[in-house]
Length: 303
Image 1 (tube, rainbow, N blue to C red):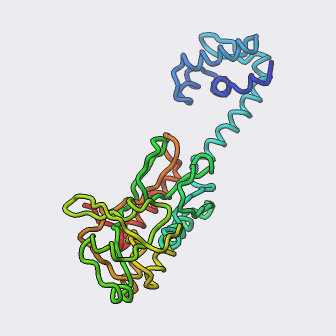
Image 2 (cartoon, rainbow, N blue to C red; image 1 turned 90 degrees about the horizontal axis):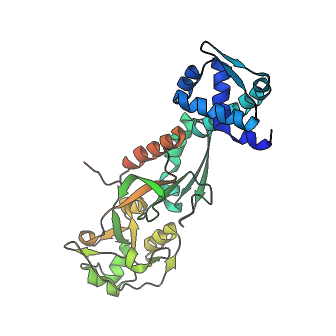
Image 3 (cartoon, one colour; image 1 turned 90 degrees about the vertical axis):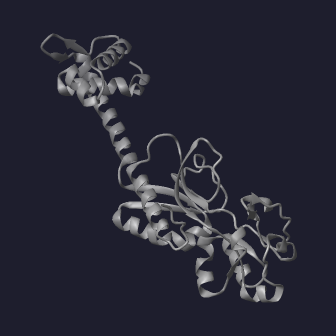
């Protein structure tokens, strides 16, 4: 008997359940399999061992001496497999989450606090990064993204949508004038988010048609918070998701302009790899984030 025998977990599991129940029929019921499948699995195991493991009669199933030697190993291996599976799908454990920096800093602390209060045995590893991480390579269970999704191997759920604001400080607008038409942006300092192409960032529309604007600016940064703070400081105009601008607009630090020409709302997505259903813990966190985000003042209300 070689070590490869114990790699055949399905056969070992079927064998162990037959021994425990004393019946192929009852073992099949416990496993949710057809009786013929259980019988075939046990037969394959016996073929690999080279001798019978069970003696079958019309009334009972008896374990042979060879079966008695193998059963403790089969039971141990299947118990470990079951525990591993339960650990992966339970409502406790560690979740590795990747999220954009500014969204996390402004709006993630409270829903995480509430979620972890309900699940005190759960641990969240939160990775803040505005770049698109490889979920598989970096072992990320869930990623929050504010972008169109291109990877067909990822599953996404829209948590909420947020409007897009073009805004500047009252000081800047007083000094440089308030743009009334998209074409007016040509004479303004349009600040840039370096992780997006300019034509993808500064997208304005008239009558449903996208306008080709060659905006210019003297500041480019990879951080959304810095972009907003530069606009508050009066450096220029910025185009930002509303979840970033709500507090500053409410306090009068920023003013919205060109609202009739702004891009359509964008989605905030929870993204995960794989095609299986999420674990209960991951599903609960995703739902908690969806409910929390949709209550925020920046969320676009849907019918």
